[in-house]
Image 1 (tube, each protein chain N blue to C red):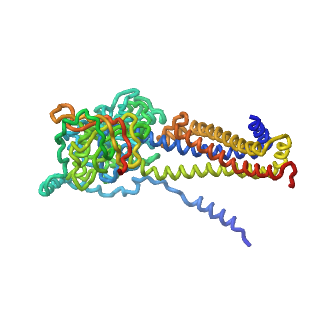
Image 2: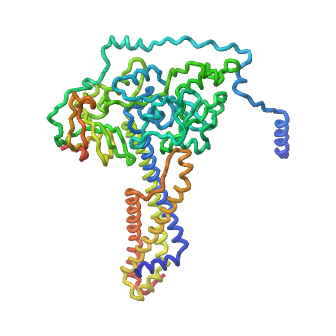
Image 3: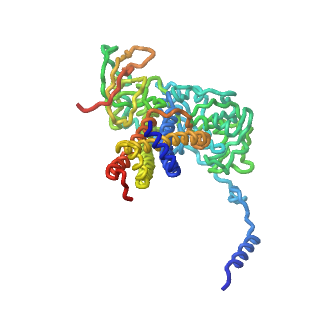
Length: 170
Length: 421
């Protein structure tokens, strides 16, 4: 019975002696006399084509009334309003401290986005912990109405929410 | 008081098993708290990375994906977007500021971000805090200037005026380097605790210059190769970027502009509200977090069951001890109380040791965690939630102690002073 060890050793030694491993650089994979690659094809900017085509289809689903009229009489009133929270700013404690309150969940893709008088921009100091975006909340506080004529701010509703609590079916 | 002293003395007599039990509880409590700590810190660091940005815009993929690669530098973009698209929306009447982001290169494992000066002016993190330079200045008109994040400068030990070579791709060790176009460090940002710390910022022109002589996916060879000086002469107008951030003049306009971008005809684009994408990310992570929490709770349970086993097996050996206690006037409820006190002592010792272990682990792992995962875990007192968890563990331990206590109570009633072993 022959021990396999000497044969194995022999193989190792011979392969070590004969094989000289050549270290390659990636550029060596390209033949030296390779013809230079053709210059890139001229780019035609067809991006405007889509606009032309789209014009035939009618206007895009833009926000219906970016500057929708507001009810001035509601200014300063203490109100309670149910809606869905779209987080804008989240504090380190994972609490939503600034959000938009909207009447339906998610940016529903089938219809245009809500007009500006259907959104309330709310801030809240302790913030609210939102586990699920599809959970509706009540928000309570004084409603502020920016008239459309105001130069600095957009027309629309805002609120410093005093109380925020989950909305339950009555 | 006497009961506690007796319990202590009795435990001291069996200190080896007691020590093992305490160790088991300590390790399990440490695991539970560590899972909780990392969960909250990861969320905090995600939440504090972006602030004041109304929309993040990139190629169409998914909201979470877009947010991860553009803001957190995790993963890669599906596609670039054209410069004209960026210009179109940067000049939109509702847009107050726009920050272009161009990603894809790296330097020793840290990502390189091509951007413009709007980044230093308008990017906000935490609670609307602006970026600040610790030293130096933002990059100027020369394309080969780089501003380092705090972590990059510290780890790689770079100072102002040093020159460094950027690499193609995002691997830690890169084989293809843009080594003919070194960048000079002109500024170092202050620490923010966000991915900004782990980023190298160059101008869009620099990004363009870096790739100016790349043809057909490889760097140009021989004579076609451009030197840095030649690259400077080129028109370095960026043709494409990876994503951009937008700030609007009114947050009420967010939905309208988001829809406009998503329906943009010239190029398929996607706009996401960072807050919404973050919330989605959290509800995704929530499942994994919950699984981890349940596992660590079970580990604690196993630790406590181990304690229960240790006490129960000791009961038989300790019948004589109980009988002696009875003979010197202890009532059966004294015996029961003794065992509950024992469980309480073991649990409290285990928890104390567990908390100590946790802080030791945080102290040891703080550096590597920040370097490799960008996760900053501060040494702070246990939060409300952690106290609640500890309280629950203690209650569970006392309840478990009730089982041997009840058995000892029964035994001591039956056995009295005569034990038939």
